[in-house]
Length: 232
Image 1 (tube, rainbow, N blue to C red):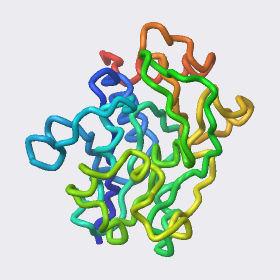
Image 2: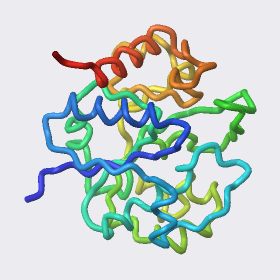
Image 3: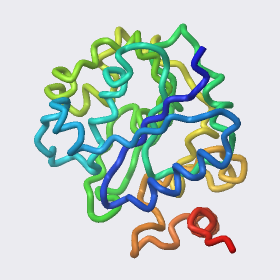
């Protein structure tokens, strides 16, 4: 039996530093071998899997490519998708163990209704039901067969992010919010016990947001420095 955990990370060229630090944090905390694949848009385009024009409401390069994960898995087994603007503090295997074949998708059921109209780098902040649910997903790929490349390239953003490709909300399992803590959105007191930090409003890898999250920004810089440490 393959015991490697397949993880797909949303990739945006503006957030390369965030992606690299997240990957290192996953490796450093995992007790299980990982197979990590960044979803790089030009590569998916070259393979003929992604052809959408840039949506005015699209804030990252991976807003829609995340929904290609089941296809990339040949609609078999489970996989994890996560945004790149995260930092893992706990063994990702503890999240992996929560997968439940009763569901097609499992995620944190955030109740996030943003008041702001823009987020990082002036990108649009679009409110909609189930916002941030798709930023971290355990995907039961054999039950996500509606997510063909044809559908992903044609469906509206709301259809994708609101899980209209499922038969209903009963197919969406719930993960504890400690696995997707929204920095500067959720109660800061909960950050101390969070297993996965998420800078959904922009993080310290952007020059004008170097202190985003306060002490959590310092934690990210510490993780970055550790990942690039030179050894004698």
